[in-house]
Image (cartoon, rainbow, N blue to C red; front, side):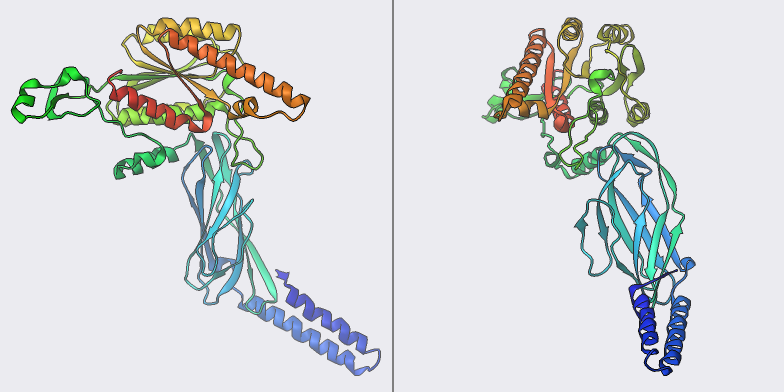
Length: 460
């Protein structure tokens, strides 16, 4: 039990009465009587104030939190006592997480962005549950644990404060970003994929099975016009074929040293963002999920100086969850990635023509030459797409106006890196390799859009 400022003020008045007793001895008895009254009021307040067992406190959150995303956590508090109290609460979330907002549904309290989850006062009325919601952003994948929830509430007379710790401790796992998957499902059902940056691709139909006749559209191939039907209807008509399904999408994920550096996050006050690997993992999962929904088989290979994981291409949602379980614990290694070994392993395990999406980054020197030499021979057998994750900070430095000699040097280095990167990508394109060089925060959308484009044009 703690005393409030009101109680301390009332107790301090006793000292004033005792000071007056130096002038008149009668004030001694007045002071003692007053002190006894205040103490009695404090004990009465303690008796009237709800006890810890008058509150039911629980926490709800996803069992699998999403990496780098805002995950909602809700604290539910119910007062089973018949008296209304004012309270504050503090939840013990993992110290590695960043919490940036707290929302209360209690009356007269609006949402407010906060640098951390600070206690805000709210009313706990009898049998009127209150929800306190905030968002956490995990910086790494792995196992974590929430602690308990602390609640402090005021006495009915405003003289005391009571506090208690409620057992809400629970483990939680941080997975790659699953919130993007749910958002995709929601927008797909609404037919509003453009809201999350995905382009609506009309499948042109590159299969051999005839499906139907339809009116000619500007981007239709000339050879697909049905001239007999055109003559009958007196307007251009196109033959549409069933789009081929059960194509194979293989994701090759580099987990070597090039994927370890973090990308600065403008939404994080510390500036620390996710590693390149984490952005790539999120993109691999979204690509695999979308491809599975479109009837394609998906597989995966992770590698550094050797092959770490290999999943044979399969269809269905079960394959997505197998990939999720594999990528949950994957991490970078401080070694040079061996592209030769990875591509040789893929060639031995998987010979059917596929879309091979390589998630890596562009190095310079010998490593870059090795990458170009090893990827190029794959293009006749597979449709190869190299996805390079660029750091927007480097591009920004290369374009900014230097203010001093240090700025001149930084810009020169940045320009050299940008030029070398562009040269390597051009070499790959000349050898028949598709390339995609995008900032980390645009990676997932860009990769899925590229897949949809290739699918729509019958390239896969």
